[in-house]
Length: 185
Image (cartoon, rainbow, N blue to C red; front, side, top):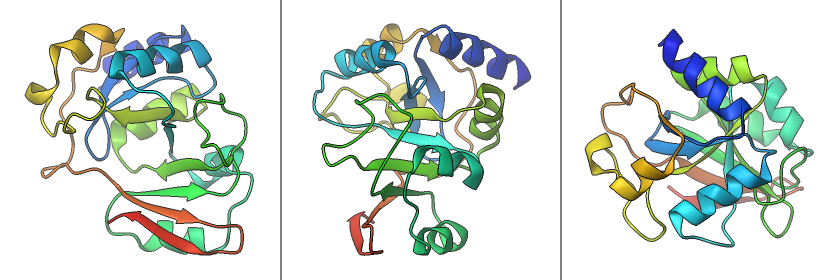
């Protein structure tokens, strides 16, 4: 795993995009501040107007990107039994493509060893979006990822998904006054 982390680290630091196993499904990722890399992902996925989520490995890093973290979020993170992406009211220190039109930002605190170690080495979060062309089904196995995606990234991490039954994360949006909206169960 160490070699894969080193290779992915170099690609991301040099402005590239990677195809990698996340704590949920296969994802495409890059530096959340790199507008060119984010645009490359949008072109590869044939999408526009959708924002990205950011994966972090700690509450400390979460507070770098989420300007406002309502208290209820800490309980949601601590007690969630499944991977949970929370959309926070205000994001910061990322490229504009990462933020939604209202300035909110989706962030997931990961426990996956590969993702956590890569994020620690980068000393920053990493973007994540499903490894599929927009509107196609999200692949749950590496074999289901299209050649378009595989050929369009700068590096494919050679590790399996750590989860046995991969599914996308739950998504909850939290308002500034702790209002909760369930986006995906």
